[in-house]
Length: 233
Image (cartoon, rainbow, N blue to C red; front, side, top):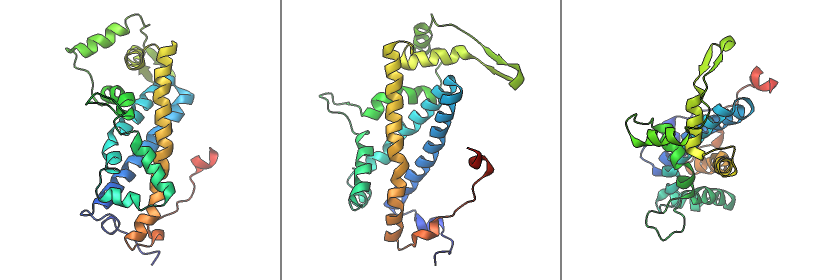
């Protein structure tokens, strides 16, 4: 019955490796879409917040290596992906490619995602130890930048802008110079390329996944009325 409630246990049995992987992919997509929406809002509103939003997007994409590598690991997930229609297989292949180590003679070759997002992820997830050289290097590299505290009395907000300036400088260099601007734009380009892929992955896969579990795909969908806020946008 199409209107029969579908439980998580029926849709994603805990002992099924493909179900576990698809559930992990779905959770990742939810988080990434929220972060990407905040990134776009901040780009139009506050450049400093846009950089933070980009750091969150980079962190999520970096951590998705567990999901991406399962695509080509040779197990049940690989078998499932290889059995999908060509459009879905190509999308998953393009996504996984960003997480493969790049051709290199070095045994510790990094993937495109690791190379581009590694430092952003590290300095977003972990705050610096005050007595370590990392923080000394950050402050030294940004020592000639202007230090401001921005106060917005009407909003009851205070922002220690000097911390944002130093963090941006440590991640990209001087974004007002060609080299720093290119580093920033490279991170944005990769994030948007991967987001455009990630956005479509569950949609390309969900119907086939449900059918193979002998579940009517209509049982998992619920349509919600449009909110007044979304009608205004």
